Image (cartoon, rainbow, N blue to C red):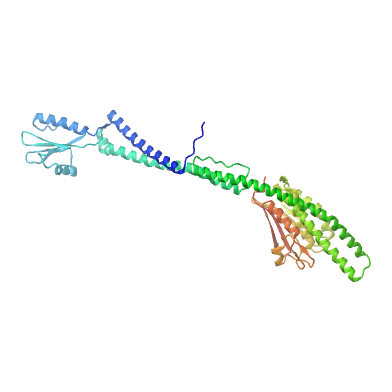
Length: 455
């Protein structure tokens, strides 16, 4: 089938108005056709039927020369006056009768809708009619207005109904075309750059807008691919550089440690100790760079894992570290936890970093509680330690990669590497990392937000 040619907005609205006009014309044409068919069937009398019926009776009365009170008018009316002008008989009554009498006062005037018939005894009879299509059934004549008004009313009501349906239909069609533009915007906002955008709406202006958005999608896709490739290359170079730096650092730190075991002068010992401390700090920085690079480059497919198994693996890894400080690890969770879709290695690395921090700052013989809970919106891992808690400064900066302090929680130097990596992992899973202080110590909450929990 040949594709329909697109038109402009002006042409679209012009065509819409023409369709509406044609619809109204068709409705009124149908009304007249129905009226004509009813006339043919004898249900409705033509507009001049009243005059014809009245003329027949007028001729009969004129020939007889006297009024005969056997009239049975259906489409006309009559008023019989005696020679004094008093009404003696009529098909009308009440105010209608009075109005007709006052309307046809002149007897020698030719009226378009009335005629006087004069009799030999001086009396007269007025015959009147109206040029309207009327029902032939007397009951319908009394109950309903004339047929023309009814047909006009029905045509108007049909036109109103047609207008409402037409507006609804046109609104839905135009809404569907606008929805294509909205969907294209959402598609780009959601970074779905692989699916081509539909550019055929039947309206040139919409087509041009959608084509521009599709061009933007294509350009953005190419740009992001190039950016991603460049970023991946940069990360690989950083990872390779960090790996290469570790070897000379190990040599420096090892030699410095050996020198510290020798008997040195005080000044020499201070210098060697400074070299050793600086080397260890650099080694920490390099380790942090490696971890961050690994996280950024770890784009493996997500897997469904059992939370209880994750906690079991975590305990196997961290129990020896906790045992060195006689710290007990307690795991609190429900048996009906649902499996979750995650990057397994990332999740393990984040939880290990959080618990290692808790072990580092918990005093010997302390207690750490690791809990996991779930609802319809999120999965929460919480690590509660018995350390001194976060200082006010640490609450704001502890998640920064190379932030350090000498007085937070312990007197030793602290780096924000572990928590920074944990936060990155949480963000990779559309979640967040929260730091809190409780009456027992510090509490770190690792949250995987809505959309990652799956049955």
